[in-house]
Length: 325
Ligand code: SF4
Image (cartoon, rainbow, N blue to C red):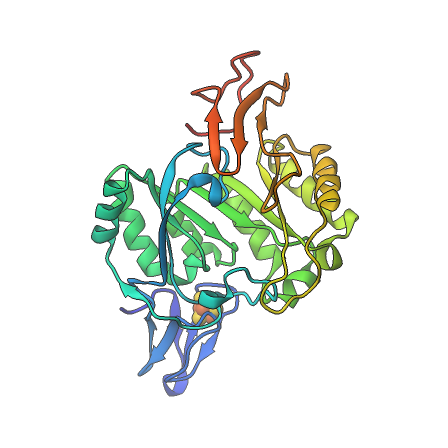
């Protein structure tokens, strides 16, 4: 399948402009994300329809805590990524081409319906590098009344982002840290990610953010508070998931201590209404509380969810809260 968002150059070279890396790719080569290849001077989306992983997950696992809580969603992943995080939790599929299974948007739609899924989540690796396939699926799912969810690092250029937004219902974007240096270390650009988050929010896509906290790397309290202020400036209602790190891929720093997670969660509470601690049991910060009166609105234990309201208003004080039911 021919890729979108590229320009032809001299000597059969192409420049991909899907994401800010703007890879210059020689004939026979591939971009940083592995799955966009120059074949005979034409950029090909070689990951089109090729999935590396598929499961029906609780929506809370994405994590999305305020979007159809308690529902299940068909989740798929591909190969490749346009960042190079040294702590990648899914490096097996993001850093190399693993065996894949061919599928189509119609087949996935059929699978989603059979599984009573609310829609589809493009997740596990960086899905937007497989832009053409995600677009085609998203159109089918939207037309059939099912939901489209992306779990993404937010590294995409404004033009393709604008093209896909009308088909998106919800997104969880990784906000890995809050300095350009930290992003550079992992092959990303903070400014691009901030732009993606702001654009999605302003366009009315339901968003939640995830910050993987690694005390030795991104545990600077001032940077963390700057990040919270950035989120609060958009809306203090945007949920932030602070995720506990475990040694993975090229990092062998010790796991984030539980008390560090709770300390940072308490700090975030000074700016934001909905803070959660993920990837770690026993730290609290699991339930959704009314920002006005503190009433429990959604109770969680692991991935078990109990909604104490069926709409996005508090049954105790009638205050609205940021959620889609
Ligand atoms: S999408 Fe892939 S090939 Fe295109 S610019 Fe980004 S990393 Fe490079």
